[in-house]
Image 1 (tube, rainbow, N blue to C red):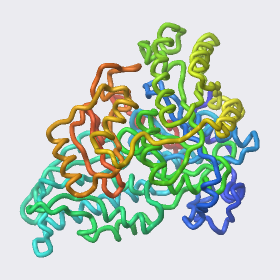
Image 2 (image 1 turned 180 degrees about the horizontal axis):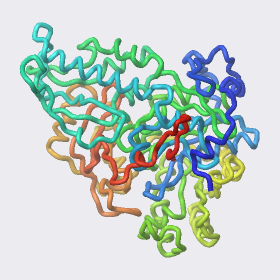
Image 3 (image 1 turned 90 degrees about the vertical axis):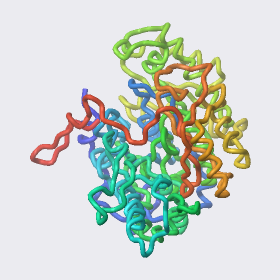
Length: 556
């Protein structure tokens, strides 16, 4: 059986000008990055067409080491939609180098449901993530320069600065650092650290911005810290937003590529769903909606994280109204949630599968809270038995939701035609009525509790004294009407990564709260979640190589 990269490398790609032509975009409008990648100017977005097109979200059950295949499903579904003559574009996030070289691998789909050129997309692509990194670190440099240059100092108290540096790599040793050592000419010593670039507020801002002016405004609204007298300092006080926007002048433009079957694919932005909003950019989604009748997109991790943030943050801020939801599940992942070990997942185990179904049950419930009757997509593996598939299918029908067997990994768009037909039917469902989970006028504690109880199944929320003080400080700035973007583990519905299935009788522990005033939300940080991952004992990087002819191997 061919690996993902072997399948991708064996595919003859179409010139990107031909892919743009499918959308009705003239080749002279493209900003080409070679023959198979292009930037799309923002002027191409048509708000009138955006409102007429249909938006489909792909989310999933709680992630496991066994994987669910959300991106593969999104790509396969988009390919299948085109096969049944529904003009469709898939809109995705850009992969981070951290997971690529870490444990998760790439994020370009798999099998015969991939976006290409796979190697470029998984590596440096068009340089967007590098631009985010540079813009973020420019602000960090300007902050420390202001501490050093007393003649122009804003008198910022270094102890209140929360702006760390970022890099697009898993590096646990940089989580907590001390800078400015070496004498008075080397800067002001203080504690700081690094986040992975996907966790940068600049990344979140890029994905929330509506145009260049909005990008600059949001960059200027980034909270830096307080002066010794207690005055709040923002990026605009450092006059940094213009230079940061210059570094992002190309990164703000969505990227056009293609799937293995020549379906147009827009890839733009890359925030993680466990530590940020976990969705591609509003601009990328609107670009797809401007040139297709249907857009398939995904949100990071499961419904409790990515989907909730997609609805409550992205759709609310972007004025988007989704039309259908797909929840991806796998037989082996459900068995994992039912107590089976990783080594046992390919073996038939009806008891574990039945016990694991309550995780799927919760994600179905979650989507119904937003007004959707989701379609469950069973991402098929060769080891799945007919009896196992029937058990999951019967369970879904008992919840009055459609279920489809998706075989796009092995068969491309052909393997997802049944799913596509059910999605088209769901889009026309008159009973659908999209609604957000909470009102922005509610207090932050009410918003957090609403998410914790409804999405996670928690009994309530506990706050540290530090978190409560931070909430009061944010409210003191007059910023009390923003959405919340909870950062917690993706491995459990709870904030404890060890609790599989559908945990009960637990509370969410909020240890601190960060203000992302540029992005337009606050970030309550729950449990032990880290925003700078570490590498596993056997990193994927050990298997990645390149030969004398430039052929890359080992990416997956």
